[in-house]
Image (cartoon, rainbow, N blue to C red; front, side, top):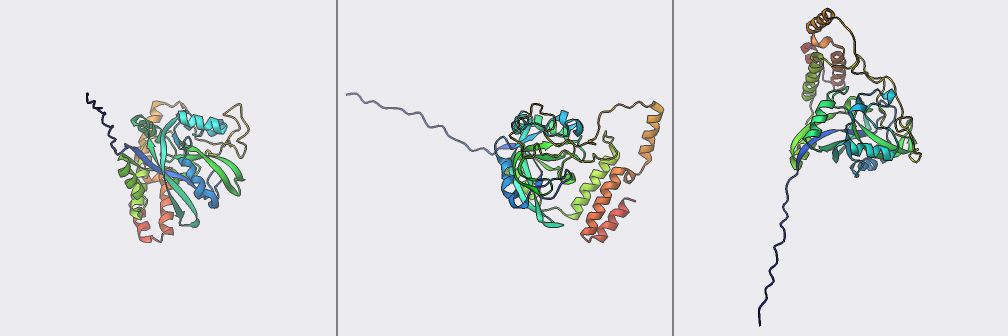
Length: 322
């Protein structure tokens, strides 16, 4: 009698590794009426915002040719078409996924209204490079805007039933200067989540002053191709007001509200070398606070400090800019 021994191969060992990556935090969506003239309803917003975590609806898309194309010609940053066409376009141009929602956060001047932030994980270093390159070209710097499909409601009375379609880098977001990327993190998921979540609890007047001062200095000293005035209205982020079932044969026509006065970029202007040298010399001689952009942001910040009854800080800021 022979003894047979069955030798089993050891089971593969599963090891848990902390996910490394590149993450950023930004505004996502809120209940206040935005600059495009629409808003979502407070009653359903908390539940509906979760749709941004749904597969296919959680893409962060960057489409450079649309960002720099005038809104009146189908540009702005949002793709235009049926909902299925939009989702497919954002999948094809995805540079990251929304992985976490933050909020709600309530507005001090309207306590019943709220907004949500989000954390996106970028796909890879190439996506980070694309974001860095294209983000600097937007109106406020790294402008983002949600794209939603609406089913029930109206611009005037608010959208009660809607679904997420994605988040986009845009030339100028519907939710204004608030709708930008506010912080980046490179590292483990757990570390970045901790850092990015904590960033909302430590914002002080001094930090806001530093941020605005830094930004004003940047725009006052850096040549750019933006016009003197911002576009009258941003891209809306609403593809089709309750008509998702209607297939459109032309994805760039009449599928999203076309708004005019988008910034025109990359235009060629003929000018003599002597005139160019003179303009550059005058620009260098101007105090940084005299540029239109600087005055605009300084005014916003002074209003903010005044509403916070921070007269002492307001005077300090004014003195530092004179």
